[in-house]
Amino acid sequence: MSGRKFKVGIDIMLLPELLDPQGVVVHKALQQLGFQGIEKVRVGKHIDIDIEASDREEAIQIAEEMCSKLLANPVVETYRIHVEEL
Image 1 (cartoon, one colour):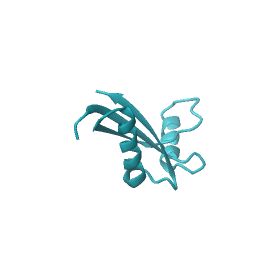
Image 2 (cartoon, rainbow, N blue to C red):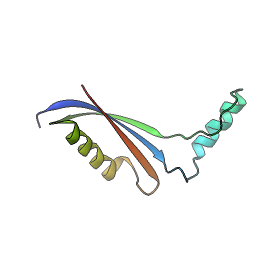
Image 3 (cartoon, rainbow, N blue to C red):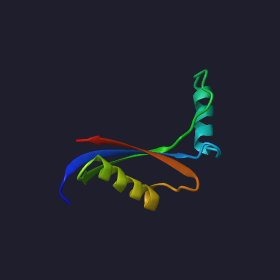
Image 4 (cartoon, rainbow, N blue to C red):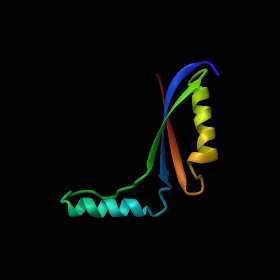
């Protein structure tokens, strides 16, 4: 494949209606450290991938396929893709 280079960032989070145990633990720890005013914490993952593609749309399509096949579980997670040309 020959094309332009893109940095793809993928943010993966649990569905909002699901309990986020990591988020609960981080929320409690922040409160114990004296941080006030924190109402809710959600913990997810961020993945950066450099992709070679013909254009931005192809880079998004490749990232979508990676998410649907491996990176995200659509039953319990949502994802958001960010693309930047390098």
